[in-house]
Image 1 (cartoon, rainbow, N blue to C red):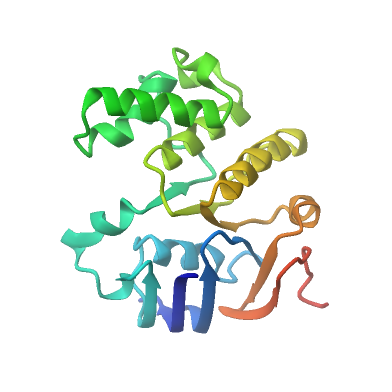
Image 2: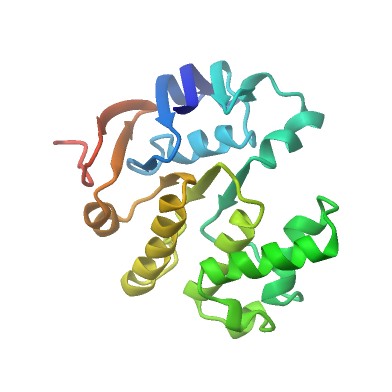
Length: 231
């Protein structure tokens, strides 16, 4: 079943730069999709439009029945509740514990405290950090911090997880640990779209690979590898 349908998508910035041009894409529920391409190819712009950080200049983005491109600003929260977002730089709150960082995502939704506790502990268990729940971010390694960020992103059981260079600041071994966590989440039914430069990781995972070049999809492989634009 289809989760995302993008048609005739274009993003032109006020500077005159067109980051995305005439892009069409369909993503099924449960897919794991790598979005690759050189810096400036449009990867991050695409991710930002999916969670409505940026608005398209034209075209449509439909996620789970929500027409993202037409969402009014005051309605964006309806989309954000359906998805999780993982960034390269973790974005953890330094004065909150691991548990509090993850629980915070549910507290702003106004859920009952018992539900917050059970969902937070479940999310931390999924990423293998239940034993670090009382630690603070500066007491964790980079890989552990990213796993906390993933726990926060999945704590409300989103249908879609968007990852923008989530292993960009991590060494290869730690990156692989993070990817194994993401694969487990994907195996549990969450659709994942991940923008990355991590060539070894893409080759190792053998998931669907979309190559973006100059704002257009140049190649789309179901079980692909990291492709150079010259290929």
